[in-house]
Image: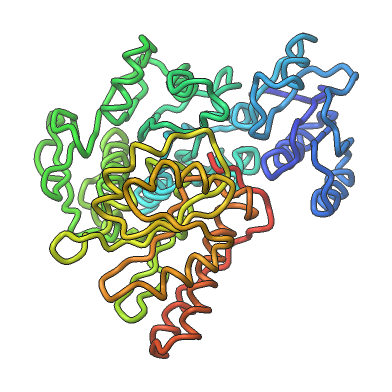
Length: 484
């Protein structure tokens, strides 16, 4: 195990990941300087706690400090090509991701789950099947529970289940998941990566350090993208797909079917699950494959997966008022996630469009035109918010009526006034949230509040209003959450 006593370390970024890295390094007796470009009141309060631990905190810093460091830890979404990081490299100072730092202190095997969409859901599914089969695990890696916050607890675990982003993979050296799951690769973060091919290369680093005896569980379409660039996957491979029936595990009329040796035939019926849609079918396939390579009993895996409900902000039914369903899919931060959300909703009577869509947010350099034919078939009208609303309107207006809205509340009110029984009002932004909201959770909670306000001003039943209130969750939304 690595020792960092008396090492001088720079931590770049003091969000939740950065603060966890600072605490871990101080517990290992390293000398730590933490810097952040921001200097908000909240961050200054957090800085006082770090200072009490002996961390030298510098806020409002945009250039590399002149001091000498043994290495630096990159804990933010700051690109590896940024001036600050490149300055570190030019001075010969190694730069590690917070993921890499935490991995170097882990004492158990890791299951790493990555991809454009579905990471959080699949991490929760894998955690669920491991717990159901009496294996000890912690689901971590996301900003709410960074790996550095749990690394020292791993000696008591069988597996550490990690959500891993392409950003984190850019600056790894030795990170090696014994089981690596890649759910999909679709256009995203093109404000960071110059091409989709560059995004594929960053994401495929998930397999960089795997050995021949490790496992790669990969969506067949993503594997084709990796192989088209001659990128290596050195481990044993299991493929899955909702669209490719030649995959090792595939979807056929609602059944998840395996053709793996000694594990052939139907595994799970989607009609028996609370999760819906082809995208969730793939998340379930990935979890099943993890169970297979870990030799977990299939009947216990299936029982655990059947009862798993959608997580908050992921195609979450907020309420049904006068026959109109309100669905919160605030976690959908790219067009592919929006497409999957629409496809998971049953069409209206006679196949008519029945979705009132609320979309828009911070621009990530993505293209929206390809969604046009699907919108023409399924969306009655789109209400567009945020800084991308004009770009999206230009892309979609030929396919469905598009109306700009100045706020999420305004969009909900107009959609609700026009919706009829059998319609669905869907918040699925296809953009990140940081132009108008603290994070996607904050955006989803404001959607829920807008639905509550609408319910109070209409003649909906007391039972409907009660259902909204009883389903309400109150996650922490003050801390910045990276929407990887």
